[in-house]
Amino acid sequence: MAASMSSDMDDTDKVKVFVEDAITMCQVPGKKPGTMLTVLGPDVNASNFRFAAVRQPDEPRASAIRYGLGAIKGTGQAACEAIVAERQANGPFSDLYDFVRRVDSKQINRRVMEALIRAGAFDSLNPDRAKLLASAGQAMEWAAQQAASALQVSLFGDDIGGNAPPPLVDVPAWSEREKLQHEKTALGYYFSGHLFKADEARVREFVKLKLKDLSPSREPVWMAGVIAGLRTMMTKRGKMAVVLLDDATAQIEISIFNEQFEANRNLLKEDALLVVQGRVSEDSYTGGLRVSVDNLHSLGSARAQFVSRLRLRMNGQSDAQRLKSILEPFRDPEQGCLVEIDYHNGEAACVAQLSPDWKVRPEEDLLLEIQGWLGESNARWVFG
Image (cartoon, rainbow, N blue to C red; front, side):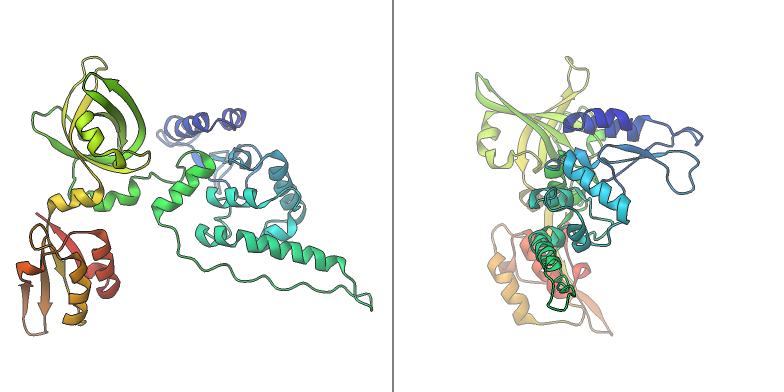
Protein backbone atom coordinates (compact mmCIF):
# COMPACT_ATOMS: atom_id res chain seq x y z
CA MET A 1 0.00 0.00 0.00
CA ALA A 2 2.83 2.41 0.81
CA ALA A 3 4.44 1.65 -2.54
CA SER A 4 1.15 2.21 -4.36
CA MET A 5 0.70 5.58 -2.67
CA SER A 6 4.29 6.56 -3.50
CA SER A 7 3.88 5.64 -7.16
CA ASP A 8 1.04 8.15 -7.53
CA MET A 9 2.14 10.89 -5.13
CA ASP A 10 1.48 13.60 -7.70
CA ASP A 11 -2.16 12.54 -8.11
CA THR A 12 -4.00 13.50 -4.93
CA ASP A 13 -7.23 11.81 -6.06
CA LYS A 14 -5.43 8.47 -6.32
CA VAL A 15 -3.60 9.02 -3.01
CA LYS A 16 -6.95 9.65 -1.32
CA VAL A 17 -8.35 6.41 -2.72
CA PHE A 18 -5.31 4.44 -1.56
CA VAL A 19 -5.50 5.98 1.93
CA GLU A 20 -9.18 5.10 2.22
CA ASP A 21 -8.47 1.57 0.99
CA ALA A 22 -5.66 1.15 3.50
CA ILE A 23 -7.92 2.19 6.36
CA THR A 24 -11.01 0.21 5.36
CA MET A 25 -9.79 -2.85 3.46
CA CYS A 26 -6.37 -3.92 4.69
CA GLN A 27 -6.16 -6.26 7.66
CA VAL A 28 -2.91 -6.24 9.61
CA PRO A 29 -1.25 -9.70 9.63
CA GLY A 30 -1.08 -11.30 13.06
CA LYS A 31 -3.81 -9.14 14.54
CA LYS A 32 -7.43 -9.95 15.22
CA PRO A 33 -9.83 -9.78 12.24
CA GLY A 34 -11.19 -6.32 11.58
CA THR A 35 -8.00 -4.54 12.66
CA MET A 36 -7.00 -2.13 9.91
CA LEU A 37 -3.89 -0.24 8.96
CA THR A 38 -3.25 3.18 10.43
CA VAL A 39 -2.20 6.00 8.12
CA LEU A 40 -0.09 8.49 10.07
CA GLY A 41 0.08 12.11 8.98
CA PRO A 42 3.13 13.83 7.49
CA ASP A 43 5.76 14.76 10.08
CA VAL A 44 9.08 16.57 9.58
CA ASN A 45 10.51 14.39 12.37
CA ALA A 46 9.27 11.07 11.03
CA SER A 47 8.36 11.19 7.32
CA ASN A 48 10.55 10.43 4.34
CA PHE A 49 10.07 11.72 0.82
CA ARG A 50 7.89 8.71 -0.03
CA PHE A 51 5.22 6.89 1.94
CA ALA A 52 6.70 4.23 4.20
CA ALA A 53 5.47 1.19 6.11
CA VAL A 54 6.35 1.69 9.78
CA ARG A 55 6.09 -0.29 12.98
CA GLN A 56 4.08 1.18 15.82
CA PRO A 57 5.37 0.85 19.42
CA ASP A 58 4.74 -2.64 20.84
CA GLU A 59 3.87 -3.99 17.38
CA PRO A 60 5.85 -7.00 16.07
CA ARG A 61 5.64 -5.86 12.45
CA ALA A 62 4.70 -2.88 10.31
CA SER A 63 1.12 -1.88 11.07
CA ALA A 64 1.02 1.72 9.87
CA ILE A 65 1.89 3.87 6.87
CA ARG A 66 3.67 7.18 7.39
CA TYR A 67 2.61 9.91 4.96
CA GLY A 68 5.33 10.96 2.53
CA LEU A 69 6.45 14.59 2.51
CA GLY A 70 6.58 14.44 -1.27
CA ALA A 71 2.79 14.06 -1.42
CA ILE A 72 2.35 17.57 0.02
CA LYS A 73 1.58 20.06 -2.73
CA GLY A 74 4.30 22.63 -3.28
CA THR A 75 7.20 20.83 -1.61
CA GLY A 76 9.32 19.02 -4.20
CA GLN A 77 11.80 16.17 -3.91
CA ALA A 78 14.89 18.31 -3.26
CA ALA A 79 13.27 20.11 -0.33
CA CYS A 80 11.95 16.88 1.20
CA GLU A 81 15.28 15.10 0.89
CA ALA A 82 17.06 18.09 2.47
CA ILE A 83 14.74 17.82 5.50
CA VAL A 84 15.29 14.07 5.83
CA ALA A 85 19.08 14.37 5.40
CA GLU A 86 19.38 17.03 8.12
CA ARG A 87 17.22 15.05 10.52
CA GLN A 88 19.20 11.86 9.96
CA ALA A 89 22.52 13.67 10.37
CA ASN A 90 21.78 15.82 13.43
CA GLY A 91 18.68 14.44 15.07
CA PRO A 92 15.04 15.51 15.24
CA PHE A 93 13.96 19.13 15.09
CA SER A 94 12.86 20.76 18.36
CA ASP A 95 10.68 23.59 17.06
CA LEU A 96 9.95 25.80 14.06
CA TYR A 97 13.03 27.98 14.59
CA ASP A 98 15.32 24.99 14.98
CA PHE A 99 13.96 23.69 11.67
CA VAL A 100 14.57 26.87 9.66
CA ARG A 101 18.01 27.32 11.26
CA ARG A 102 19.20 23.86 10.29
CA VAL A 103 17.64 23.07 6.91
CA ASP A 104 19.32 24.53 3.83
CA SER A 105 17.49 27.77 2.96
CA LYS A 106 18.27 27.20 -0.71
CA GLN A 107 15.96 24.17 -0.61
CA ILE A 108 13.25 25.46 1.77
CA ASN A 109 11.43 28.64 0.81
CA ARG A 110 8.36 30.20 2.37
CA ARG A 111 5.97 28.37 0.05
CA VAL A 112 7.39 25.01 1.14
CA MET A 113 7.19 26.03 4.80
CA GLU A 114 3.56 27.06 4.52
CA ALA A 115 2.63 23.86 2.69
CA LEU A 116 4.26 21.73 5.41
CA ILE A 117 2.45 23.66 8.15
CA ARG A 118 -0.94 23.44 6.43
CA ALA A 119 -0.49 19.69 5.99
CA GLY A 120 0.23 19.21 9.70
CA ALA A 121 3.87 18.23 9.25
CA PHE A 122 4.87 20.39 12.25
CA ASP A 123 2.11 19.14 14.57
CA SER A 124 4.55 17.04 16.60
CA LEU A 125 6.50 20.25 17.38
CA ASN A 126 3.54 22.56 17.90
CA PRO A 127 -0.09 21.66 17.09
CA ASP A 128 -1.18 25.31 16.68
CA ARG A 129 -1.00 25.53 12.89
CA ALA A 130 -2.40 29.08 12.83
CA LYS A 131 0.51 30.43 14.90
CA LEU A 132 3.05 28.48 12.88
CA LEU A 133 1.69 29.73 9.56
CA ALA A 134 1.60 33.33 10.79
CA SER A 135 5.20 32.97 12.04
CA ALA A 136 6.71 31.31 8.96
CA GLY A 137 7.92 34.57 7.43
CA GLN A 138 9.57 35.92 10.58
CA ALA A 139 11.13 32.52 11.28
CA MET A 140 12.83 32.49 7.89
CA GLU A 141 14.02 36.08 8.35
CA TRP A 142 15.45 35.14 11.75
CA ALA A 143 17.23 32.13 10.24
CA ALA A 144 18.76 34.36 7.54
CA GLN A 145 20.01 36.76 10.24
CA GLN A 146 21.49 33.85 12.16
CA ALA A 147 23.31 32.64 9.06
CA ALA A 148 24.70 36.12 8.41
CA SER A 149 25.84 36.48 12.04
CA ALA A 150 27.64 33.14 11.87
CA LEU A 151 29.85 34.51 9.08
CA GLN A 152 30.96 37.51 11.08
CA VAL A 153 34.01 37.31 13.30
CA SER A 154 34.94 39.77 16.01
CA LEU A 155 38.34 41.45 16.27
CA PHE A 156 39.28 38.86 18.89
CA GLY A 157 38.38 35.95 16.65
CA ASP A 158 35.22 35.00 18.53
CA ASP A 159 31.96 34.29 16.73
CA ILE A 160 29.29 36.92 17.24
CA GLY A 161 26.32 35.09 18.68
CA GLY A 162 22.94 35.45 17.06
CA ASN A 163 19.77 36.66 18.69
CA ALA A 164 17.30 34.37 20.41
CA PRO A 165 14.28 33.54 18.24
CA PRO A 166 11.24 35.80 18.67
CA PRO A 167 8.01 34.37 20.08
CA LEU A 168 5.51 32.94 17.63
CA VAL A 169 2.98 35.43 16.26
CA ASP A 170 -0.08 35.43 18.52
CA VAL A 171 -3.13 34.77 16.37
CA PRO A 172 -6.40 32.94 17.12
CA ALA A 173 -6.31 29.18 16.67
CA TRP A 174 -8.06 27.81 13.60
CA SER A 175 -11.48 26.27 13.96
CA GLU A 176 -11.77 22.64 12.89
CA ARG A 177 -13.29 23.79 9.61
CA GLU A 178 -10.41 26.21 8.93
CA LYS A 179 -7.85 23.55 9.81
CA LEU A 180 -9.38 21.06 7.38
CA GLN A 181 -9.66 23.62 4.60
CA HIS A 182 -5.96 24.49 4.93
CA GLU A 183 -5.21 20.77 4.99
CA LYS A 184 -7.07 20.30 1.73
CA THR A 185 -5.00 23.10 0.17
CA ALA A 186 -1.82 21.21 1.02
CA LEU A 187 -2.89 17.58 0.53
CA GLY A 188 -5.73 17.86 -1.95
CA TYR A 189 -8.31 16.41 0.45
CA TYR A 190 -9.27 16.31 4.13
CA PHE A 191 -6.91 13.91 5.82
CA SER A 192 -7.27 14.29 9.59
CA GLY A 193 -11.05 14.57 9.73
CA HIS A 194 -14.29 15.12 7.86
CA LEU A 195 -15.46 18.66 7.16
CA PHE A 196 -19.02 17.86 8.24
CA LYS A 197 -17.77 16.97 11.73
CA ALA A 198 -16.89 20.62 12.31
CA ASP A 199 -20.60 21.53 12.27
CA GLU A 200 -22.21 18.20 13.11
CA ALA A 201 -23.06 18.98 16.74
CA ARG A 202 -24.98 22.12 15.72
CA VAL A 203 -26.67 20.42 12.77
CA ARG A 204 -27.81 17.39 14.79
CA GLU A 205 -29.67 19.66 17.20
CA PHE A 206 -32.45 19.79 14.63
CA VAL A 207 -31.56 17.52 11.68
CA LYS A 208 -31.49 14.06 13.24
CA LEU A 209 -31.62 11.95 10.08
CA LYS A 210 -28.26 10.71 8.78
CA LEU A 211 -27.71 10.09 5.08
CA LYS A 212 -26.98 6.42 5.68
CA ASP A 213 -30.48 6.06 7.14
CA LEU A 214 -32.37 7.62 4.23
CA SER A 215 -35.22 5.59 2.74
CA PRO A 216 -37.97 6.32 0.22
CA SER A 217 -40.64 8.58 1.67
CA ARG A 218 -43.71 10.35 0.31
CA GLU A 219 -43.24 13.21 2.75
CA PRO A 220 -40.31 15.65 2.56
CA VAL A 221 -37.48 14.93 4.99
CA TRP A 222 -34.65 17.08 6.33
CA MET A 223 -31.03 16.12 5.71
CA ALA A 224 -27.67 17.86 5.81
CA GLY A 225 -24.10 17.46 4.58
CA VAL A 226 -21.21 19.23 2.93
CA ILE A 227 -21.03 19.60 -0.83
CA ALA A 228 -18.48 17.01 -1.98
CA GLY A 229 -19.21 17.47 -5.68
CA LEU A 230 -21.25 19.78 -7.89
CA ARG A 231 -22.16 19.79 -11.54
CA THR A 232 -24.67 21.82 -13.53
CA MET A 233 -26.64 21.05 -16.67
CA MET A 234 -29.25 22.64 -18.92
CA THR A 235 -32.75 21.18 -19.14
CA LYS A 236 -35.97 22.27 -20.82
CA ARG A 237 -36.90 24.00 -17.57
CA GLY A 238 -33.59 25.86 -17.32
CA LYS A 239 -30.33 25.32 -15.50
CA MET A 240 -30.18 22.78 -12.68
CA ALA A 241 -27.54 21.30 -10.41
CA VAL A 242 -26.70 17.83 -9.17
CA VAL A 243 -24.95 17.98 -5.83
CA LEU A 244 -23.10 15.17 -4.06
CA LEU A 245 -23.99 15.59 -0.39
CA ASP A 246 -21.72 13.99 2.26
CA ASP A 247 -22.30 13.77 6.03
CA ALA A 248 -19.46 11.32 6.85
CA THR A 249 -21.94 8.42 7.11
CA ALA A 250 -22.81 8.26 3.40
CA GLN A 251 -22.95 10.23 0.18
CA ILE A 252 -26.04 10.86 -1.94
CA GLU A 253 -26.76 12.87 -5.06
CA ILE A 254 -29.51 15.47 -4.81
CA SER A 255 -31.22 17.16 -7.75
CA ILE A 256 -31.74 20.92 -7.52
CA PHE A 257 -34.05 22.15 -10.25
CA ASN A 258 -34.07 25.59 -11.83
CA GLU A 259 -36.24 27.52 -9.36
CA GLN A 260 -34.25 26.41 -6.30
CA PHE A 261 -30.96 26.63 -8.21
CA GLU A 262 -31.49 30.26 -9.21
CA ALA A 263 -32.71 31.24 -5.73
CA ASN A 264 -29.80 29.61 -3.91
CA ARG A 265 -26.74 29.99 -6.14
CA ASN A 266 -24.82 31.56 -3.26
CA LEU A 267 -25.14 28.35 -1.21
CA LEU A 268 -23.88 26.04 -3.93
CA LYS A 269 -20.13 26.01 -3.42
CA GLU A 270 -17.84 23.04 -2.92
CA ASP A 271 -17.22 22.25 0.79
CA ALA A 272 -20.18 24.43 1.87
CA LEU A 273 -22.58 23.04 4.46
CA LEU A 274 -26.05 22.52 3.02
CA VAL A 275 -29.31 21.75 4.84
CA VAL A 276 -31.91 20.24 2.54
CA GLN A 277 -35.61 19.50 2.64
CA GLY A 278 -36.43 17.02 -0.09
CA ARG A 279 -38.28 13.92 -1.22
CA VAL A 280 -36.44 10.60 -1.30
CA SER A 281 -37.34 7.98 -3.90
CA GLU A 282 -35.85 4.87 -5.43
CA ASP A 283 -33.66 5.36 -8.50
CA SER A 284 -34.49 2.54 -10.86
CA TYR A 285 -31.54 3.39 -13.09
CA THR A 286 -28.80 3.13 -10.43
CA GLY A 287 -30.61 0.91 -7.94
CA GLY A 288 -29.98 3.46 -5.20
CA LEU A 289 -31.84 6.50 -3.94
CA ARG A 290 -32.41 9.93 -5.38
CA VAL A 291 -33.46 13.15 -3.72
CA SER A 292 -35.52 15.89 -5.31
CA VAL A 293 -35.00 19.15 -3.41
CA ASP A 294 -37.90 21.27 -2.17
CA ASN A 295 -35.92 23.77 -0.07
CA LEU A 296 -32.26 24.66 0.47
CA HIS A 297 -30.80 26.39 3.54
CA SER A 298 -27.56 27.46 5.11
CA LEU A 299 -27.05 26.34 8.71
CA GLY A 300 -28.28 29.68 10.01
CA SER A 301 -31.45 29.89 7.92
CA ALA A 302 -32.29 26.23 8.61
CA ARG A 303 -31.86 26.71 12.33
CA ALA A 304 -34.33 29.59 12.19
CA GLN A 305 -36.93 27.12 10.93
CA PHE A 306 -36.60 25.00 14.07
CA VAL A 307 -35.56 27.28 16.96
CA SER A 308 -38.43 28.07 19.33
CA ARG A 309 -36.53 30.10 21.95
CA LEU A 310 -33.21 31.21 23.36
CA ARG A 311 -32.62 29.95 26.92
CA LEU A 312 -30.19 31.85 29.18
CA ARG A 313 -28.83 31.25 32.66
CA MET A 314 -27.35 34.37 34.24
CA ASN A 315 -25.33 32.33 36.74
CA GLY A 316 -24.84 35.23 39.16
CA GLN A 317 -24.02 37.70 36.38
CA SER A 318 -27.40 39.45 36.07
CA ASP A 319 -27.01 42.73 34.18
CA ALA A 320 -30.19 43.88 32.47
CA GLN A 321 -28.53 46.76 30.60
CA ARG A 322 -25.81 44.55 29.17
CA LEU A 323 -28.35 41.93 28.13
CA LYS A 324 -30.44 44.64 26.46
CA SER A 325 -27.45 46.00 24.53
CA ILE A 326 -26.56 42.50 23.24
CA LEU A 327 -30.12 41.59 22.22
CA GLU A 328 -30.99 44.95 20.63
CA PRO A 329 -29.22 44.46 17.24
CA PHE A 330 -30.96 41.09 16.79
CA ARG A 331 -34.51 42.11 17.77
CA ASP A 332 -37.24 40.84 15.45
CA PRO A 333 -40.69 40.92 17.16
CA GLU A 334 -42.42 39.54 14.06
CA GLN A 335 -40.33 36.51 13.07
CA GLY A 336 -37.79 36.07 15.87
CA CYS A 337 -37.74 33.52 18.69
CA LEU A 338 -38.60 34.10 22.35
CA VAL A 339 -35.93 34.71 24.98
CA GLU A 340 -36.17 32.90 28.32
CA ILE A 341 -34.08 33.36 31.44
CA ASP A 342 -33.58 30.41 33.76
CA TYR A 343 -33.37 32.35 37.03
CA HIS A 344 -32.58 31.23 40.58
CA ASN A 345 -31.53 33.09 43.73
CA GLY A 346 -30.67 30.24 46.09
CA GLU A 347 -34.16 30.01 47.56
CA ALA A 348 -36.35 29.67 44.51
CA ALA A 349 -36.13 29.29 40.76
CA CYS A 350 -38.25 30.14 37.73
CA VAL A 351 -38.13 30.57 33.99
CA ALA A 352 -38.81 34.19 33.07
CA GLN A 353 -39.90 34.84 29.49
CA LEU A 354 -39.14 38.24 28.00
CA SER A 355 -41.86 40.18 26.23
CA PRO A 356 -42.53 39.19 22.58
CA ASP A 357 -41.20 42.67 21.75
CA TRP A 358 -37.80 41.19 22.59
CA LYS A 359 -37.94 38.28 20.19
CA VAL A 360 -34.58 37.86 18.42
CA ARG A 361 -33.28 36.42 15.18
CA PRO A 362 -31.56 33.06 15.94
CA GLU A 363 -28.18 34.03 14.51
CA GLU A 364 -24.86 32.45 15.44
CA ASP A 365 -23.27 35.82 16.23
CA LEU A 366 -25.87 36.45 18.94
CA LEU A 367 -25.28 33.10 20.60
CA LEU A 368 -21.50 33.51 20.49
CA GLU A 369 -21.64 36.99 22.02
CA ILE A 370 -23.85 35.85 24.90
CA GLN A 371 -21.73 32.73 25.47
CA GLY A 372 -18.66 34.95 25.59
CA TRP A 373 -20.31 36.82 28.46
CA LEU A 374 -22.16 34.11 30.39
CA GLY A 375 -20.18 31.00 29.39
CA GLU A 376 -20.86 28.41 26.71
CA SER A 377 -23.12 26.23 28.88
CA ASN A 378 -25.33 29.16 29.94
CA ALA A 379 -26.76 30.12 26.55
CA ARG A 380 -28.37 27.70 24.10
CA TRP A 381 -31.03 27.42 21.46
CA VAL A 382 -34.11 25.37 22.33
CA PHE A 383 -35.60 23.56 19.36
CA GLY A 384 -39.29 22.90 19.10
